[in-house]
Image (cartoon, rainbow, N blue to C red; front, top):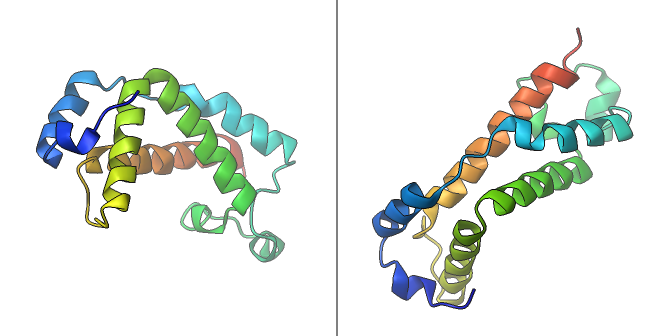
Length: 137
């Protein structure tokens, strides 16, 4: 998809309108299998080693203590599903981000709603994974 995204969207409000008109919802069930398969294949060892050794895995801080491999795996799974459901939105938001970086812009950015939504989904999905698969029963 070749287009000048910054010229197309001059403000975050314009991009947000585009977002609201085109966004297809991503839900936990979309990533559940990938998340749980990784936890199973890692035999539950998805945390930083010193955190895991302490033996007290709590919901309050488990996300901050995920191993780098776990973080990348979960982010990649979410990215794949997000892209599958919203390819144009994803490509447009990524193009805007790259253009802003090239122009030296570091503020919230025009595609702020994309980054906020992705972050909220990631946090909510990790919370759900913890509740359904990780917390001691």
